[in-house]
Every structure is written in C-alpha cells, then in structure tokens.
Amino acid sequence: MKPPATRPSIVGAPSPESPYPVRLRGTVTHGFKRGSRDLGFPTANLPDDVSNNEATVLQIGVHYGWASVGRSATVWPMVMSYGWNPTYKNTKKTAEVHIMNVFESDFYGEELRIVVLGFIRPEYEYSSLDALIADIKTDIEVAQRSLERPAYHRFIEDPFVLDKSAQL
Image (cartoon, rainbow, N blue to C red; front, side, top):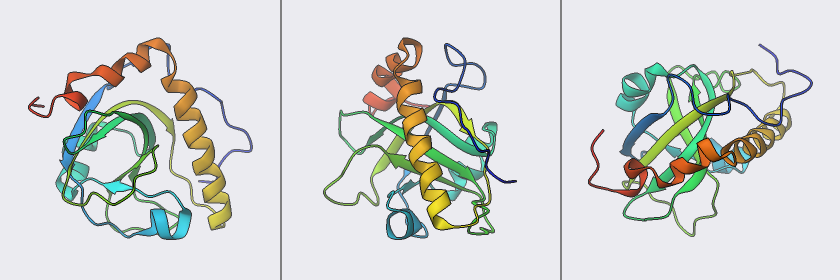
C-alpha cells in the first residue's frame, strides 16, 4: 500500500474509543537500530512477547499516546510503529516507540510504559527513506496535535505511566 498524497492534521474521535486506551509495558530491548541510524528517530523497542500478545488488540500501523521510562516521573508524547515495517521487509512484528524527547543516553533494560490512545495511519511501503522520514515527521505533528485535545491530554496523568507500582 502506498501513502496518500494528503494527511489529516488531527486523528481520532474527540475522545479515545475502543480499543483505546491500551496500556503496554516491557523492558526496552535492542532492535534493528534503524530508527536512529537510518531515520533520525530513535525508538525504544518493546519485547517480542508484548508485540505478539498484549499489543495484538491494536491495528497494524502507527499509533500515538504517552510514555514513561524507568523510574522517571516524566511522561512524554510518543508515536509507535506496530507491525511489519514493509519498507524494511521485516519478518517479525515489532512495537517500536519514538518518544518525543531528546535523551542524553539510551535506556536499554529500563521499563517502558505506554498508554496508546489512537491510530494515525496504516503501514505503507515507501519508495525511499526520504519519503518515510517525511511521513514520520507528519506522524509526529499529527500525534502532537491529537494529544492536545483535553480527552487525550488528561492521560499524561494516567496512573499506569506515572506509578511504577501500577499493574496492568
């Protein structure tokens, strides 16, 4: 499937609808290192068991929501690619989270908690990395605008992403 020529600037209903919110957590694992190396968008990868079990309620594609890492009480906006990454022809499904923040170091081995609130778009196969990078930039802008709405923004205080003792 090829990407459309135009994209909406905000996605999702006025407030999250089923299956959202979806709360996922796992230890940040090593991925393909394409997010930062090839694309300029570092990702924190959730473990395979999360991608293949808990996340399966999600549609394949790009999602948005909030994330926290480790013991930090800070919650950041995020976009997540969930699926097969057809441009790279992956053979396994992955959940790759781009947290919209610049971190001084990586956080492999730390716990990542996300609350997924909406769907941005399906996966596309891109003809070039430049086209993929442009669409990721649009995904980030769409996520930021979509999360500004009160019904979505309130999840920045969701106990799941704030309280490290909270259970699924």
